[in-house]
Structure formats: C-alpha cells, structure tokens
Image 1 (cartoon, rainbow, N blue to C red):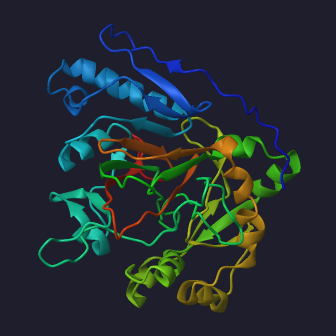
Image 2: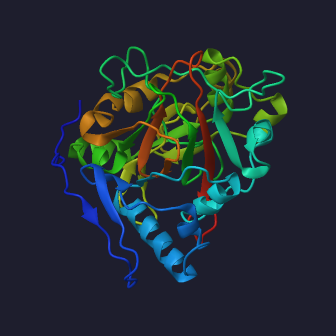
Length: 360
C-alpha cells in the first residue's frame, strides 16, 4: 500500500468574488476539504442563461462557476434547478466546455426531448411498449454503511474515468437529476490530484512511466457480461475503434497539476510506455473481456487507497441537482438502487474540449 503524505484536514467554506460584479457573489463550500464545490447560492436557469437578468451578469456567473469547478478539483454541484429543459441543460453544459454535439449511433434512442447532445440514463420505460427509454446497466448498491471504497474481492464499485478508449477522450461530463430514488443511486467521486500527491516518491516515479491500454471492444464486452442489455461492437465497429493508450499520470492542461488517470472498464493492460501487445493477446482482451494481470497489479491495487474517505464524495441526488466533473482529475462511480420499486432518471452531456480549444 502506498504511503499517505497528503493533508487530510477539512477546508473552511469558500466564498468566491464576482469578478467586479456587485450583484452576484457566489457562496461555495467544499464537500470534502477543498474537493468538490457545493454552490450554496440559489440560482435559477433563467439567471444563469440571462433570461431574466443582465447578460453581463449571466456571463459573470458562468465565469465564476467554471473557475470554481477547477478550484475545487474538477467537481462542482448546483441544487434547485428543477424543471429545466434538455435544451437549457445543454446550454448550461456549454459553460464548462465544448459539448459533444450528438450521441453515438447506439445511444441515439436515449436522447432527451430531441436534443442530440443530451442522453437519458436510468430505468425509465415507454408507457405503451414497456421498452427502456434510458441507457441502463445493472449496478451493485453501496454496501451496508455506505462506504464507496473499492473492494478488490468484488471489484466494486466500478470506479472509472470516462471513455479513455476514444481517440479524443472527453474532458468531463454533466449529470442532471430528473427523478431520484429515495434510497440508493448515489454517484461517488474521488480526487485523483490529492491521491497522486499522497503517494510516496518511488510509487510516483513508477506510475509516471506507465500507460493504460484502453479498448472500447474490451469495455463493451466486459459490461455486456454482467448487463446483457448493453450492446457490444460489431466486427466493423471494432475495426473502426482500435485500442488507445493514455498516461496513468496526466498533467492537467489548465492547472498543470498531475493526477492519476486511465482507469476505465476499457482498460485491458497497464504497461511501461511503448510496450507492444501481440495481436492474439489483444483479441482475447477485446473478444472475451480478458483483463491483463497488469491492470490488477498497477491500477486495481491502488483503488482501495485512492477511493478511501479522505479522497471521496458520495453525492445523494435530489431532483434539480446538476453535477459537473472533470475526467482529468477525478474518478467516479455509479451505485445501484431497487429498480423494481423506484425510478431513476438522469440526463447527461459530455464535454469534449475546453472552451476555445479543439479536442486533443
């Protein structure tokens, strides 16, 4: 187990200035020390989008929120936004980066209110046909006591950063809560900046030289193995989506702060940078969901430490909540609920690049 050296003290609530505007000063407090910012100032979509305020005030609010998102480690929460439309959600998402304009072909049937960039996640069904109208996966609930800490025996919760198998991995995502179960269904987040900072020098040096091999075919085969409704790639889709390699330690392009990176259900190997993989072995990863032992040795062995209480936030949803996270400095995981008794409906957008930049 790596040696912990990080400061575990909790930071006091932080109040952000308004960049010269006397009208709006946002009060934002930390959810776990200085990880995760909770916007305590009550805001409406109309305020944020400038519908019932001076457009310059709306721009100032947007700038404050984006700054707070990075200041609090790439995790920011707003409450009380009940009743917004999918189009408004997409517009709010664009405060934080360039929104992916449309969903993958396999997920277009889950778009919300005809907005191509917004996907529904949960267990909602069409009232007439009974078919699912949300992307759905069977996920274990948190154990008794509610700890999100990773368990190596059960390999749960499924902590990850999103879509590292893409040529240009997304920089972040937003979730908006439409319906939440009264129990279960929380989303958990972990601070990979402070987790990396807390490692001993030798561990940091070793991880700096590693890269994660990430394959969409491996990801889809793995998820399909425990959630049969999840689609797998056709041979043509597999050929069009070859495995990618990402660093296990990523230097954030905006803050220059290093963070652990590259853990995803698509991660099929963790190897010294540039190490080749024979085609036959890659086939076993992608067709049979086989995971190389290096993933256990290098990444999964770290997960109990980096998802311990000192680094994590468990967010229990209420309708109207909006959460934005940065994939380059956080891990997150979904948790299960009683889907036979309760309905959960979340809307999601994906951020592909920082504002003013192209996806890289």
